[in-house]
Image (cartoon, rainbow, N blue to C red; front, side):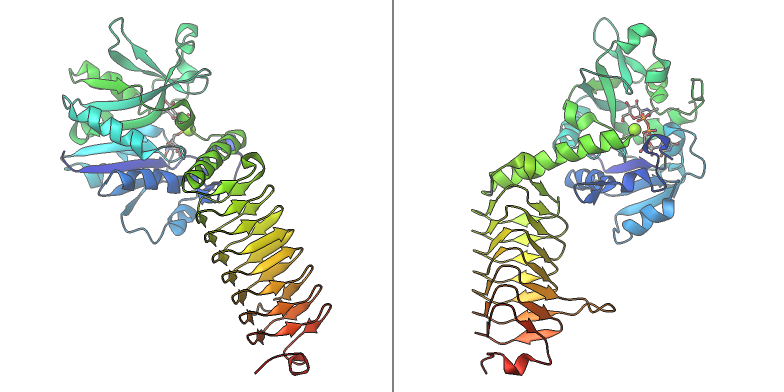
Length: 408
Ligand code: UD1
Ligand code: MG
């Protein structure tokens, strides 16, 4: 197949989200929704991603500044989705391949669906192939209009539907694969003849048909992945579905999640085989958990946490930016922040690292095979040698460390 690029629309103001932040930066399980759309595009091998930005454009560009496959395109005034695509004209007017057009507010997109779309498009090479979904409640989405033979005739936006059209359950999730040349030729003809006075990309379809080209629609999008996030409520629904996907994948990889409904795991977390996640565990950020660990109940793991293998992290323990080596046990009520904890260390109930002195954060290094008695406070910066034995209720700081049972 010829080269494929993607255009992602992400310039909208999003009044329904009621936010100062660009809608596409709102997070779904720890990652901006736009990141998931990029993932899907990359998985199907698009060569360049053109992202149309406008409202809070700087924020969006800053967030993804390290991605070198992205071309940022400005849409100064948000005049509609067709206008947004048109903003890419100067980059793509001579491009001969296929252009995938997607919305940045659809984080539940799956690469498999894009593959199905591309496969369908290959057959007969229509001017555009779009993937549709069937929804029980189609309100808010553009409706797919087909003739008596099932051929697609166009898309009507929700606000422009007649009552008959409103009842159509086949909707437009905004997954299109266009012949690039025909796309840009047609966009010139789109007019803002609708209730919102916007240039609708969806109007391009009937115009394409009028010029005698073919438009193909396949019902390939699962209802759950059709959702565009336009409000905080929809954001919470998208988070819930994404959370289920994350946990599903972890379980397939051999992780036990005792109570999926009462567990929250960030999309960036990695968890090894035969680790058990007990209920009410909250894993946020880039967290890496090895094999055979036991985490929770009521554990809170934050960014930068690495648990190697066979670590036990029990009730009401919080770990941040720390590495706990094989066999570490911290079973009850501890806080381990900015620390390196050696192999087979036992951290007693209620022990904490005091990593912040009011001005700066410092690190704590605990050697292998140490014993930290209950209720100890380890004042950072601190280094405990291998085999150190700290009695219960001790405040350990650099100043008093020599008096405590440190082995040379
Ligand atoms: C759009 C589709 C609708 C579809 C739905 C699926 C149109 C006209 N409608 O409606 O058929 O069912 O998505 O979620 O295409 N954007 C810009 N510039 C603009 C306007 C929008 O970049 O001038 C971006 C938005 O940031 C957003 C995307 O385009 O990421 C879609 O816009 P949105 O306002 O969410 O359209 P919907 O009403 O959801
Ligand atoms: Mg939308």
